[in-house]
Length: 184
Image (cartoon, rainbow, N blue to C red; front, side, top):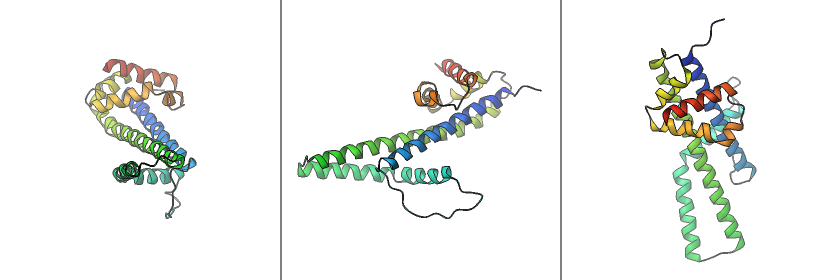
């Protein structure tokens, strides 16, 4: 059996990484729902061949990201109204803390989904370096074209949650770490 071409291995590594990043964003969404900082209401039409929990989660994430600026604006307005009233009751303090946690989650989801978008564009560049016979070199050479790619790769090799996941096997993880080292 022939060995997989290195560009395909590199692409497979990044696609697996992207999927894990998206799952991390979805986990964050589920945590916000569980903690009751986010409530999801509404109805969607389910098509038998197009429905899945992940698609529904992605729809909610898309809506949150589409409203991110409005969410932040409302937070600032709320904080200003609290300052104007000079109220520091335990309920208000708890509400402020919950809003801060929610804003951090929204920001985290935004960052994760941006990483996923970076990977989408990144793998397209592999067609230009198909002749390189080293998956780490392919990842590194294409990463060097855009600082966001290097930031995304740094997240992947340094994030404990990502590293603990089973997204990449040991060999794939080493390839990614080697690629990151080549970019330093």
